[in-house]
Length: 121
Image (cartoon, rainbow, N blue to C red; front, side, top):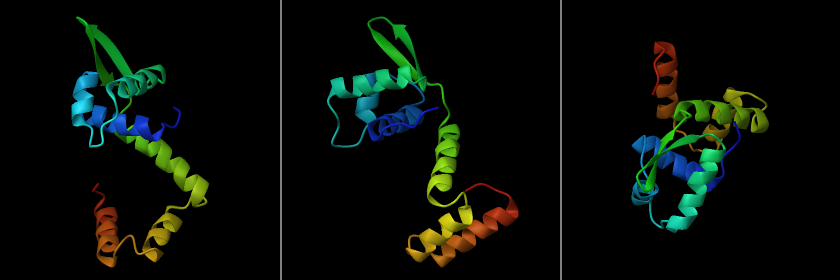
C-alpha cells in the first residue's frame, strides 16, 4: 500500500464517509474550496489505479467504493510516521505533543483511562 497525496487523502476521507458514490457525490461532500470536477475525477482514477477504490459502471457513470478500510490505512501510515519521526516510540510521540502543548493533562488522563479499561476512543 503506497502513501496517498494530500488530494488523494482528502478524496478518500469523503469516499470513506459516504461508503460509495459518484464523482459528483464526492464533489458535493468536499469542503470549500472545492477542486474542479476534472481534477477530482483524475484523483479518483489515481485512487482506483492504486487499488484503494473499486469502480462499477452504472449507465453513463461510475459508482466508486473503498477497497481499503480507513482504519487499515491509518494503522499502516501512523506506524510508519512514528517509526520515521519518533524512533518507533509512541511514548516519544505523546511526549512531543505534551511539550508542544498540543495535548492537555486532562486529555492525557483520558488516554490513560482508556488504556487501563482497554477501550477505544
